[in-house]
Image: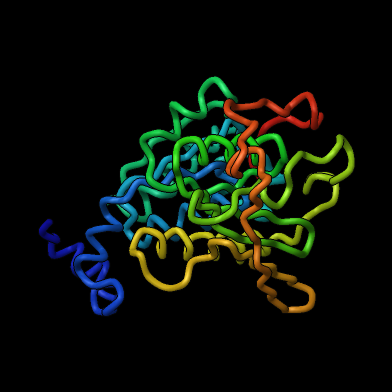
Length: 270
């Protein structure tokens, strides 16, 4: 493709990087990344991926902007209270970079629509805030062969990894089954440091870009842990479980499962 003069100037700091260059920027502009949630993690993901020139961003969320969101969900403003989050996020992306085509899905993910929504996207960036959605997303990505850049936050801690089956483990390799209802409080119940999603979401954005460009050492088979209070990071190895019911040697999960009733939590996004 040919860059316009405006694009050459906008992406100049990428183009002069040997690891990116003009060809790499072309890859970014042609990439298709679906963001699960326009909340705490989805906000920095959307803004920085748009700034980087990811040409096609999808956003799925069914919620509206609430005053309590603004402590961390920085893609929205006070003027957006009451609006659909997907609409507010789309406007924020378009205002930042008109090169980006935004596709919105104002809907809940479940076993009836997830495969159809995921199939046309290159990378899934998971910023959801509950276990039913995490298992649904993981299972759909494995079945479709999609890369899942996963992030999660809790109070002052966050974690990031890349699930890329069959190359590496999936979410069920770490946690074969969801926890019982009430065992793990949500961010709404336990609270979360407002700036924490910015750190974790940006780490996810880095992993998304690395996947598109094929550079660096991705967090496939590695779990990056961040502790804001201690200002510490740790990296743990996550091994592929040969007994995993989804991606192991003897698969027992061959279709999608809705865990909403089991976990007792609505499917949503942080």
